[in-house]
Every structure is written in structure tokens, then in C-alpha cells.
Image (tube, rainbow, N blue to C red; front, side, top):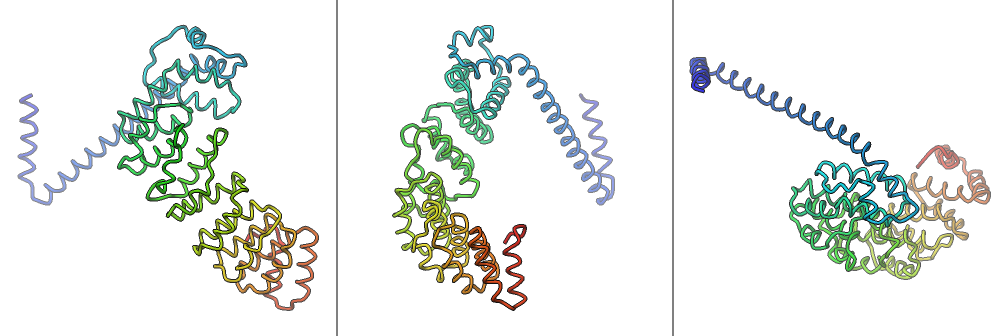
Amino acid sequence: MEEIFFFFKDIYCLILQLPIVLQFAVILTAVFVLVYAITFFKLVFINWKSDNMLHQKKVLNLLYLQKIKEIVYSSKNIDLEDVKLVFDNQKEFKKSHKLLITDTIIELVNNNEVYNEYNYNELLYFFDLKTFWEKRLLKGNVRTKLDGLSKIINLKLSISESVIISLVYDKNESLRKKARKAYIYLSKYDPFRFFNEDFDAEFTEWDKIQIHEILLKRSKEFTPNFAQWIKRTENIDLKCFFIYETAFYKQFENLPFLLTFLTQTTTPKVRKALVEAIGALQNNNIDDALISNYDFEPLVVQHSIINTIKETKPKLALEFLESAFYKSYDTSLKISIGKAIFNYDNTGKSLIKEMESKIDDNFQKLIFEHIKNPLIKN
């Protein structure tokens, strides 16, 4: 030990004898070498860990995959005692094994929606995955808790609400949001409580996608009336999300409310969402409320009205579209209107041909070429 100490002491003394520039260069080189060595060994460790996990997964698949498949996809119900017999009454499973078993089960049920739910729940109970993931939520770091919430949703575990409640007001935004999304899926008593609180300070496109997916998983049990939050929420993006979901779940009873709200709100983003939702719920009809203020709407809302008409093809909209085409000075909007007319099968195509025959301006002719070409997207 003393020899090592004196060795480093000698090096230190040698460095002190060097000019200041060389001292700085030696120290900088030593730091770079140290960082490189740490990074190298870290990469080696990560690679080893990854290879080890893959090896474990292969071994576990050989041991358990076929047995899990037989139980999950069996047409007859298999009780817990019979599940134990299938796995030779094995009682203990390592943490790494439970992590891999979790992924295996999720892959199976995601790839095949038809499976025996009774057997599936008995299998979860046998591997004690409920307790395992609850503990990781309570004691893990942020990353572990985020992963745990995802796994719990994908496994469709019925865990204690008290475990989730401890996370829904966490200081970490990602964890807080994830917990609130999980709460929507897992809570049996008040799953939508956070919609009354504008869900969170910020509501992103990714939040919309994830909550929509969670609502789809719950929809067989219960779908809320989204209109109750449209006026109440202050967050514009969340308001638009509720409007979208109202149309997606075909809540026709909310159509009068949406039409009334369209006359009350002036926010372009909300008006755009309302136009699209009303168009979807009215199908092949068009309400005067959608087109009465068309000339005074912002461009983004006008585009939305035209796209809604294009998709739903209301019976009495051609006259409106023709009028809107001649009034428009925006080239992109003009093309959108033209394509909406052209989309009306033979009637629309004949009208476009008639309108085109009345022009002699080269630029206008180019617009009609865009309208008639299905390969050109506006």
C-alpha cells in the first residue's frame, strides 16, 4: 500500500516541476483518459447486461412461454391450483424473472385480443405480479415508477387506488401525468376526477393520444359524457380533446350543445374542433350554424368547414361550395373547395368542368389542374 502511495506522490512531484502549460495538459489528458475509461466500462456493462437479459429471456421462454400460452388461450377455465401444477408448484421467482414474465404476458395479450380472462387473472395471481408492481411503484425511483405504471395498464392489473393516489400529485410532471392517466384506467369509483382539474397544467398531443388509448380500453365498461367538461375546462387543448371524443364516441345527444357552443366561442382552435365534431355527428347533413358565419371565420376554421363537407358530402352543400370558391382569394383554400366539389362524384365533376369552361386566366386553369389531379394534395 505504501509503495502505491509513494508512486503517486512521485508522479505528483514530477508534475509540479513541469511548466504550468504542461501541468494543465497533463491534468486535462488524465481527465480525458478517466472519462474514456469510465464510458468504456459502462458500455461494456450495459452490453453485458443486455446480452444477459436476452439469454435469460430465451431460457425463460423455453421454461414458461408454452405453459403460459396453454393457460391463457385455453377454452376451459383453469383454477389456481391447476396453474400451480402446470409450473410444478414453483413458489419463488426472481425479480428479473418477473420482469421478463411481465413482458412475455403483455406481448401475448397484445398480439391476440381473444384469450381466457379467467385464466389470465389466475396466472397474474400465481406470479404475484400485482404485489410485485405495487412495490415498485411505492419504492422505486422515477424511472421505475413510470415503467411500473405502463406495465400495470398493459397487464390490466387491479391495484389499490391508494398506491396510485400517492403519485397523482407528485412534483415530477412526467410521473404525475402518467399516474393520472393510469388512474383513469384503474379507478372504479371516480376515474375522471382529474378532468375536473383540467387534468394538468399542460396538455400535449402525446397526452391526447395516450388518454384516448386508455379510454378505448375502458369504453366497454363506461364512457363518460364529455360535454360536461367542454365549457368547464380552461385549457384550450383539453377542451378540443373533449370535443373530439364527443364525436368519436358518437354522442349524438350532445349535438345541440355543440351547435349552441359554436355560436358562443370565438377561439379559432375551438371553433375548428367544433366544426369537425358537428360535421362528424351530422354525417351527410349540414347545419346552417356551420356555414352561416363562414365568410367571417379565420382561414383555419374555413379549411375545417370545407374538409368536413368534403368528408361527409352533405346533400345541399354544392351550392354553398360553388359560392365559397368564387369568394375565396386564398389559393390553398380555393383548391380545397374545388376538391370538395370534385369529390361529389359525377355531379361534382360536372360542376367543376362547367366552372373551368368559364375561365380564361392561366393561373386559374392551373388551380383546376390541381383540383382534378388526385395525386396532388393541398
